[in-house]
Image (cartoon, rainbow, N blue to C red; front, side, top):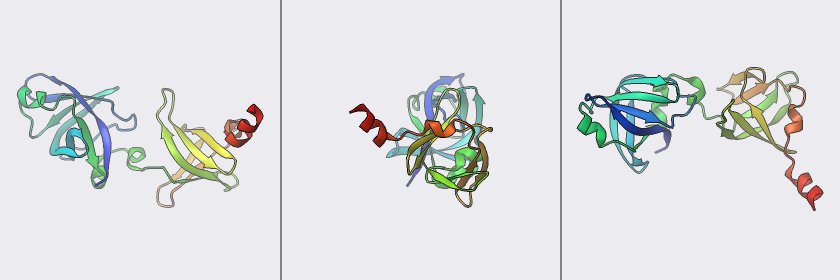
Length: 181
């Protein structure tokens, strides 16, 4: 079973079982009611819960679960992580969060030339970044509208505008190591 981490319960609000959730991925904006979540201290020790409501507020969210109707029940979940099974990610209303872009091919939007494959995604304060493995090293690509032009989920490709200076970010570790020695 493959689970996606959605956040951590950090406290309770009121007396009707509302939960504060922190450490939420930036791309996760909304989750539909009636979505099944797994909650526990680890992926291996989770229990299923059903969402009554999810309200995102900047970096936190307020979560209500159908099974949690009092502050006593809510307190039992404090510090537990929230996960969703991959098959339930269709209930999450954000296509960027749905897709795991790792492994997607990155192409130049003008030439259609393959630049490389996405090997990591970094959450950064200003904007997220994809790390693209190229034949010449790793290239960080900012995930911004000025660069990312076409996302094709079906063909697993991302087309980017190669703005001036972008390829200067290429990290050719072999050449750098030789220059240092």
